[in-house]
Amino acid sequence: GSLKETASACIEAGFRAFRTSVAGPGNDSDEGFVSQRMVNETYRRCQEIREGVGDWAIDYHTRLDVADAVRLSSLIEDLTPYFVEDLIRSENVGVYKTIREKVNVPIAVGEHFGDRWDVNELIENDWMDYSRVSIPNSGGITEFMKIAALCETHYIGLTPHFTGPIGEAALVHCCGGFSG
Image (cartoon, rainbow, N blue to C red; front, side, top):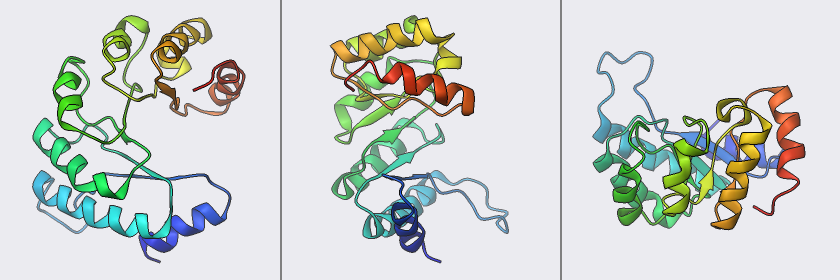
């Protein structure tokens, strides 16, 4: 079926939102990843998904550079994604200052980071809207709770990254103590 039908089926099955990713070249393509074409194809797919669901999000999987991440975010702005995740590679968190100034859709970051010192600039400077930090990557429940408390005091929502059944069970308990 179409992406619209797939997205609708997920919502009908009880999921609250549909999550997608940046398009990639097809299996039968020898072209490789051409970011400008993939941005255009991703936008087309997002339009189709938006027709099928109300709430949706997209993970860029750090596949784009700043210019293409900003361009795709601008293209999908009217499609009102719940968030755009991991727009670019995460080695330099300061680049999110530049992105925040140019992107008007909610930004989710965090699965590539560890303890609170990895994400404190993102939190304290409001360079993200949702934290995707996970319990295992942050070093455990105590460190995750410290990050979550920092996020709460800066009005940054928690949408922790899924890491498996044990991590998910721990997240249920941890996130119960926070508003976001």
